[in-house]
Amino acid sequence: MKQITFLIIILLGLNWAAQAQTHVVEVKTNLGTMKFKLYDDTPKHRDAFIKLANEGYYDKTLFYRVIQNFLIQGGSKSSRNAPPGKRIGYGDPEHTVDDEIIGHYFHQKGALCAPRQPDEVNPFKQSDISQFYIVKGQVFTSGQLDTLEMAVNRPIRKKITRQIYTPEVREQLKQLKAENKVDEFRKIAGQVKKDIASRYELNRNTLEFSEAQRQAYTTVGGYPDLDGKYTIFGQCISGFEVIDKIAALEVDGNNRPLKDVVIEVNVIQ
Image (cartoon, rainbow, N blue to C red; front, side, top):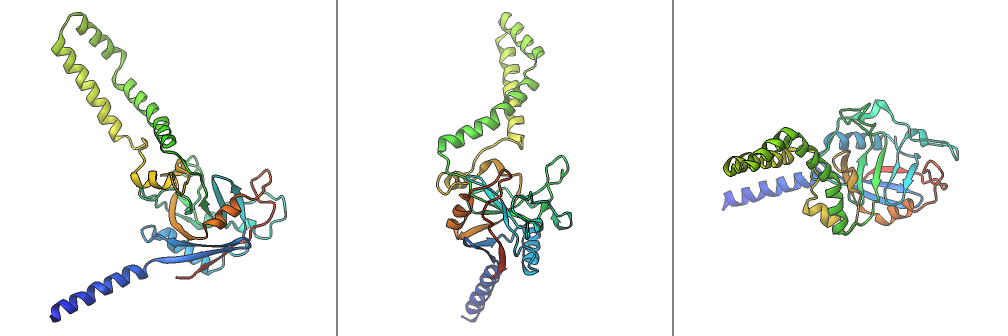
């Protein structure tokens, strides 16, 4: 009995420890407050974000880039006290973090993410944690997701097919068919088909939405084009209506809201 009680205590302690690791932050604005849980399996982004939030780094900055059905982005120190019409949102090389792009996180509505410089100048996909963006996105139909998959996958399969099913192979099969060499034809054609399928399956650039992605993108919505390209380190747990309010604001030619949306970030758990 004592052993069972002791085991229960250990299990409860482990459960409490796991729960205690979850951090929650609030992003307060003049249009309302959003709360986000931070993911523990993106510790570099989590810890850097918490550190900057506790230092007040993001306070009095703006949501300076707002695009309906896409995202709202803010936190850049260049946005603090920026006069109307000024182009803002420059990165801070002193606050970069190694990427933590994890496949089971995706750009559903409310995802808290880190922007970064393009691949040409940032091949290792380091994030700029001096800023952050929140996904607004849109709701997709299942058919639209199928179309997105085909748009990505079809060119990949065609390229692989051209590499394996070369003019030389095509001519060889044509000759075997003309000579009625059925077994040899089937052997070579079967190997070609197998090689194409194998190389396609190993290609990391193909797109296949998981059940979780399909469920989210066809209900709450999101922006799947960004999946796998940026680090997602948190998710909105309340205040989705605030995301909608900010995303709907009238903006200037640089997508900056005509009405300033001032930010304050607090770590509450």
